[in-house]
Image 1 (cartoon, rainbow, N blue to C red):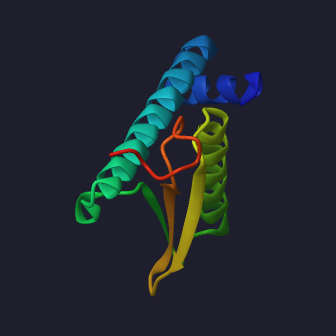
Image 2 (cartoon, helix red, strand yellow):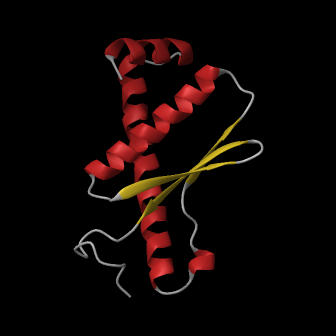
Length: 121
């Protein structure tokens, strides 16, 4: 985000642009931390044969909304996967079309530090 974006967000919410920036950084880190944890837990559950309990993070984008909503959702998905890959997670995105929209599911094939092998048990 640029300084101008933070100034606009700050003006919309009646806070300083520095406060808006701090909230963005905090909330972004929290989002990534939680997504990373969900990925690691799901991978571990599958590695020990508990596939039914594994809940992979997913994003649903409904049909019928404005194209700007679709683009924003794809931007968030791209940013999330890029940031998680920079953290060293081998994130893959699976896409499924449904009657009501599109589902994008994040997965990892192995837990980092296991040299590309299956998740340790």
